[in-house]
Each structure stands twice: as C-alpha cells, then as structure tokens.
Image 1 (spheres, rainbow, N blue to C red):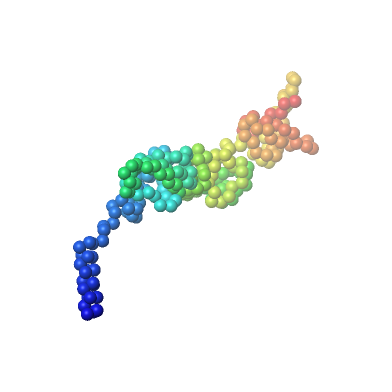
Image 2: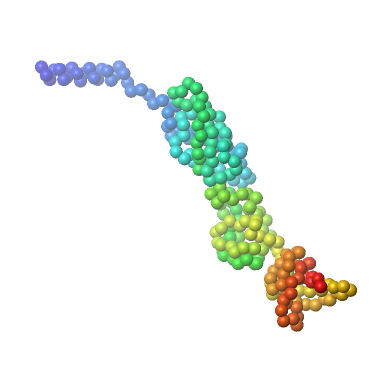
Length: 236
C-alpha cells in the first residue's frame, strides 16, 4: 500500500512539472549578451566626449552594470583618464520608474606614439635615442595628446631618455645654434668697442640662451648670449 502511495505522489509531481514548466529567463536580466549590448551603447554615448585623433577607446566596467536596455548616457568624469564615471538613466528591469545609476569604467586609450628606442643623455640629438613608433595606453600613462610630438626633425634632448618611454614635448628643444666643445665666434661689445675673437662653448645653447665660453688665451670662462649659429655676444 505504501509503495502504491509513493508511486502516486511521483506521478502527481510529474504532472505538476508538465503543467507548470520552468519560467523562461527574463529578457532584461543582466546576461552576458545584454551586458555586451549595454557596454556598446555606453561606449557609443561617451566616445564623442573622449574622442581624440588616432585614439582607439576600450571600456571595461568595474563591477556589474545595471540591467537596462538603452539608457541615457552622460559622462561624469572630465577628460581622458584611466577610470571614468558614467551616469546611466533609464528603466531597470522590474521597475516602473526610471532611475539613475553611476557606473565606473576602466578606460584603455590606445594610440601610436613616438618612444625612445634606447637610452640617451640630455644635450644630445634626439636621433641618438633611435625613436620608433609604438602603441601605448595614453590614459594609463596619464598623457595628454598635446604632450606628444609628431615631427622630430632637428630636435634635441633636454632630459635623459629611457628606452621604451614615450617621447614628450617638454623634454625636447630645437637644435642648438651652438654645441658643446665647438669653436664659435665671440663678439664683445662695449662703449665704442667691438671685438671679435674665437672661443669654445662649454655647453650647448639655443637662441637667446646664456652659455659659458672659454675665449682663446683666457684662463677662465665667461658668460655669453647665443646670437646665431656658431656665434655668441658678450656685453661689456
């Protein structure tokens, strides 16, 4: 009798299962497909604000995004950074009213830039550092595009260069008009006096820069102003 009752209960359970099949997965649940669609929508919304010439943007949410379909997107963080906050406004799954959610995203901003191919000392031609093009994440390195040079012709280093590091405008200068240990024309001006002689420059310098010069026959150097290519002036 007991075995008959167990068999009946089993049949009852099976009939309930057939009459009440499992509920289908919610179409607005945070599934991988829905999350990818939302991520693409967010990227489309913030890209105009972060867009820069030659930069390839990638967004990765920090944590799980809300279950929204196509919310309004507003970039909260200003400027291109490694992490940005984005405000999403819309109806979440199972809610009647629209809500606003702030989600943080990790940003990758890939761009081809000039990097140093080898170490080099300051006061040397940039060409000695063997520059090469390489793709870097400018957001992770906190670089502004205005920091990055495009044309390297005739530039010199004002700071030490380390292989693999991006080349920055603030570490460069125009080719010096006078170069270290080079012989230059030294013109000395005074009241009713102009004397031209030769001297050796102790440090490279650009137009208008003051450099030490050792005049022929002198025991110590004097300061002179770079006035042209291979020429310095001394005011007496």
